[in-house]
Image (cartoon, rainbow, N blue to C red; front, side, top):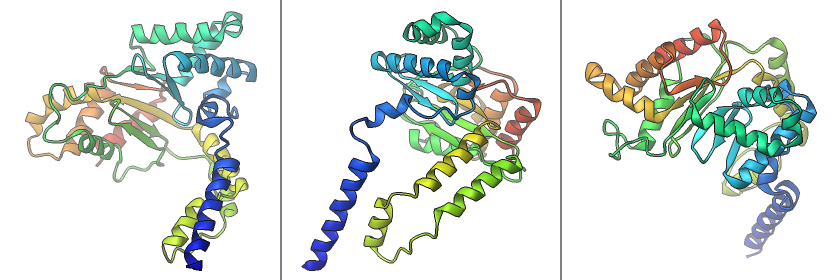
Length: 303
């Protein structure tokens, strides 16, 4: 009996610490969508004043239409109309608008988003939530299976590169693929320094150990050091964005010619072709170097 009560006290106490000290309910999740340290590569293209103004404009747009900055990837996800916008491109355009954008950032951001919605230029990807078309499957795959196959196509075998992250949303129909040849030595040292602060992992012997491990707040010094390493790494990462709707179109056209190939292999061919020939449905967050472009093709084509 006392053992059960003790466990409840630990669980309740841990939840209270998480809710009041870590989650910070007075600010809430939405606050941290727009009010964070200026550290990611696209943020550093602006002065602190310009960055704060842009984020204020995005926050105002979020209140009306809905958006979410995927900071690490350098991508702005817009909910209505559904699209992705490169935050590098958005920041560059915002700065180019000059003092007018600083005086009225809400108007400036709305103008830039409207411009992006009118034309799918480099750094802009229009999306469709109905990317499966009139059916519920693609080649026998539901949206989850198709997403898994697509993400598998972005993981190369035998290509000398560093994993730079990737993300997929099967409901909004898009995926991102980070491209990085190799982090510089000083970035690898930042990661080593961060991991040295993490301490020894807890031994997980039973369910209570798992609960306690999940609820235990991470060492704030480790968290800060790891985030510094991630932010520094982002300076050397470029990201490709893919629209599922256009990938599906290419997949269905290619499938009869690759009848016996695995779906992920068909997707490797399709996505590589889209990237190589700059077909609609894929774009970069910033203009790629020749090395980055070649590496992305190699990643897609070497499964």
